[in-house]
Image (tube, one colour):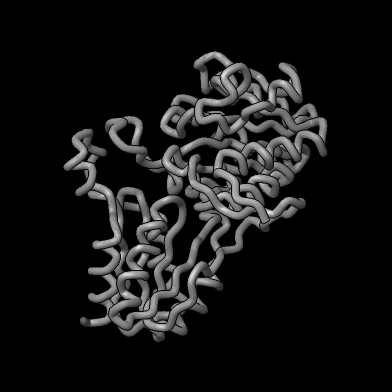
Length: 325
């Protein structure tokens, strides 16, 4: 098992699938000549050429539409957004075309396309470049939404997404591209819609996903020193959601804290909260606590940004609250 960066895992997944299937291609801003804005497509232009690794203009609506249309001619595009903040100018293609083609055509067309790029905050980038959109896209029937937190999961899930016959939103993080993790040499896929228990525990369940889950790990390490055992579930796929893994854990620990890097209103954490109270309410020994960003646009000031984002201290406080400590 070798150790590689998140960006390398993404690049390997795309390259392996392009070697396997000639209908797969990549397009987006700076993906070719520049090797990707975050170097996640490094070397791919040299290997696959300009017909399959395509630099686009700054026109997300345009190249998003080209990608969706090409699926109806037998292609399987990977559309990279420099950030999902920029997907907003092309969101009509995702919501009204990619997600609905199968139903509106009566099953005559599928739309095997992957929209990928970073989501959430990445430091001092300001309010318009620091938003998380997982819940936006997960609200749309017809879309699958994946948010990996480490290189191993990223590679296995991206390969599965590229092979999927439905549109997939694959969300990364600018602050994770340099993260390192163990990734096998051989081929592997991770099924979409299956959460992973990253750490087993007995006192409280913590559910999270994406880069913010690192704060849950920090909190769990600190709480372990106080004799508190945390079970950490990495959701990995927001839609379809693995309810069973969450419910089974809550049945064991009887307490739930949800950590998410997104605004609190209509968040993924809100949906999890509803599902848990609906399915396993009688197992709960304390109210569910969800931890989100502050309900304001992201600030630019580093001091305010630190207050805006959830952190391990917030998780520790929440865990102790559900344990009545």
